[in-house]
Length: 198
Ligand SMILES: Cc1cc2nc3c(=O)[nH]c(=O)nc-3n(C[C@H](O)[C@H](O)[C@H](O)COP(=O)(O)O)c2cc1C
Image (tube, rainbow, N blue to C red):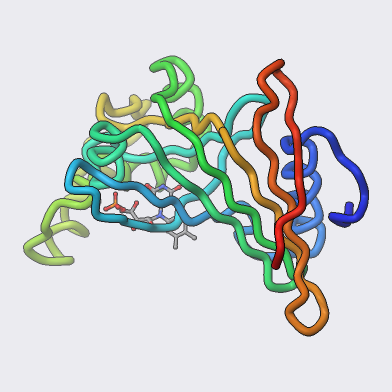
């Protein structure tokens, strides 16, 4: 769906663009840059994978002791960005986050490949690591310890739901005369949109 086509619901457009990226065969088509700021107000950005989308929120999963999680605890406002060069498209989304329920995190954790579950329990994400060899040894130990056993979702691992308050869709135009469309809440539960200059 091109930006010239009308679409009242930004979630439908986001979903459609994600599908187009997937169908194009783009590797990690669901990768998004996640920007946060902690209490020092210093911006921080990194990639995460979008793991769920409905008519209210975008979902991603991480370690709750990580830098991003600490910053989101300090300031729940965040921004995410998708970019697909092959489609000449970008989407910026701004909103606020909250943690998913424990049961939702557990259900998602249970669906992950075993290797990823082991990595999640082995890694104290964003903490200093004395050597790579230490981490690999820890992974081997955990593989032995949990052989034939179920791995429970760690207490400090789970999801965040980003509830958008603003979407901006961007599509490449000739001679940098790009197309931009901004969606904001209209106040009655629906969304209003307007064009922005490129
Ligand atoms: C394509 C891509 C996808 C990633 N997906 C995730 C993810 O879903 N969750 C996650 O915690 N880290 C993910 N990472 C790693 C993060 O970018 C980051 O290195 C890590 O989460 C630590 O960030 P922090 O110290 O700001 O918390 C991904 C990295 C890349 C390049």
